[in-house]
Length: 279
Ligand SMILES: [Fe+2]
Ligand SMILES: [Fe+2]
Ligand SMILES: [Fe+2]
Figure 1 (cartoon, rainbow, N blue to C red):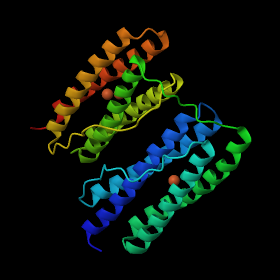
Figure 2 (figure 1 turned 30 degrees about the vertical axis):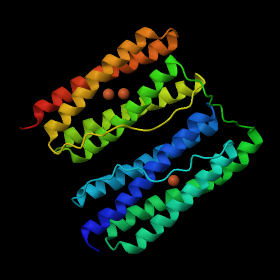
Figure 3 (figure 1 turned 45 degrees about the vertical axis):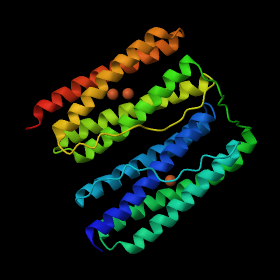
Figure 4 (figure 1 turned 180 degrees about the horizontal axis):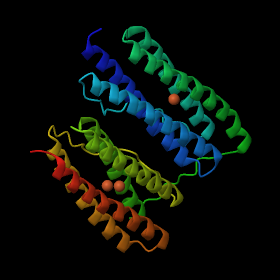
């Protein structure tokens, strides 16, 4: 099989992982804090590691990781129906990895996919078990339909965080050196924290998180990537600052201020990184 064909298959796997991550996070955020939500968010983190392994492999093969998202199953009104959808998502993943393991001959990539497949089989069993436990624990969809000034700020924040997670991951995979790769990935992980905080806050404020993103920067040159990253960080730091001033809930004010401080830190990290990049 040609390298480009392998890249295409791995990119399909990445898109599937991406969809699973968002589907599981959405379910985890929407049932309220508790043991099950933590376990589901733990599974989403394993899917993030899969995405990372796959993206590194795509880069090693000379390709660019895909940041399209595969299909999600977000229908269903009960937590039990969500868990059934997650069982189906794992069945899709198992079928896809099984196919790709058969199709790809490279032993190192085969081994990686087999490792991921074993995780997916384990997740499949976990979600089947969760279908049973949610009925016992009587978990419900705790999201509301509220729309006000606060949910508008949270909506904006969630959209921004999701966008930069993807952008910084892409930039980390395209980085010319290990230092930039690692810094970009570290900041992407910090943005994942922000996404989680804001989504949980949205649910606790009676709203519904909508995890969609805006345009991702696809610059080819590292200094252009960093320019785009610095620009967006400056803009959002100012917007978090302004938002923190207008909200009255002290806990939300504290949260927005804390995120603003992280974004200002990101500006500095990216500015320092830019100095290490040759024009
Ligand atoms: Fe999985
Ligand atoms: Fe952020
Ligand atoms: Fe940031």
